[in-house]
Structure formats: structure tokens, C-alpha cells
Picture 1: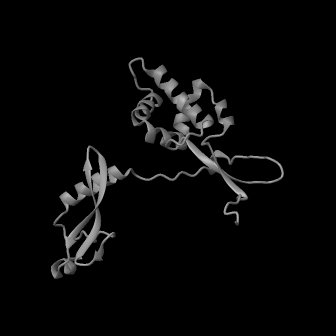
Picture 2: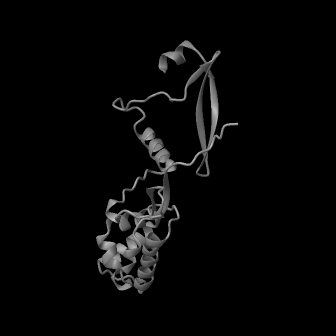
Picture 3: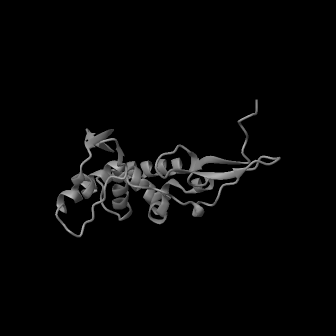
Length: 186
């Protein structure tokens, strides 16, 4: 029997988003780092918007009713996570690409080369689409397209639809009877 498995020459390794050397950032300079590091700011905004806005106030010198030290500690913990942990959570971790050779050597790209890819949550997009549909239902400049999962079987037109209950989606195959009127619309 022929072996169906093989080893690739390349690998992908999950890695922290910031280099270990970045931990040289001192605790007392964390607000400066927050102001100057766009990747750190975006990662924090996506994972903890409330902390982000508190840190914004802190960096602007606003009074936070004695919470300044707690906010600095939280910022520092998040930043250390970005330097040490490779757990895939938001933009706090990334990956690097490597190849296998006769000796082991792993080098990570400079954090300046880090590129993020993020997209909106599907529940958020669903809410935006529903609200847009309500407000612009009769607007003639809006184009509507048929569901791209439509297919015909016998005397039925089937497509995938979903329901939202308690912010959870459940999908199902829905069928309607094929007719000349329906075919003219789609």
C-alpha cells in the first residue's frame, strides 16, 4: 500500500504579535507606548473597548477617580501578553513561516512587518443588514439580489435560510413551490 502521508518542507508557527525585546518597555512608560503604538491600540480596542477608552482618558491626563494605577496595570498585562503569548485571541498573536533544514533556526519578523487581517463579526453584519433593509426597503437606488444558495429540484426551489434566536443563528434548507411568478422575480 502506498504511503498517503508526507512531510512538507515548510511550516507555520503561531507566535506572539510583538517581539520579546519589546518587553523592555518599562511599566512607567506604558501610557506612552499606548499613545505611540498603533497595533497595540487597535488590538486593545478590539478586545476590550472599555479599557481602551479608559486608557485614552489616562493618556490625555483626565481624572479617573483613582483608577489610574489599575488601568496602567491592565495595559501592561495586555502588552506583556502581546510579547509572550501565542494564544490566538484578537490581534494579540500572529504566526510566522519557516522551512525545515539540517539545523533548527527560527527567526521572527520585525513587528513592523506584522500585518493584521480582521473582519466584522457575522452577528454585527446581520444586524446592520437588517436595519438597513428596514430603513431602505422601498428605496429604488438599493439593489437586491437573490440568495446565492438557490437551486431547483423537481417542482421546488430550495435555498439556505437562517433564524436568529438569542444572538445565535440556526441554518436550514427552505423550499418553496416553483412557479412562473417566482422564477420571474429571481
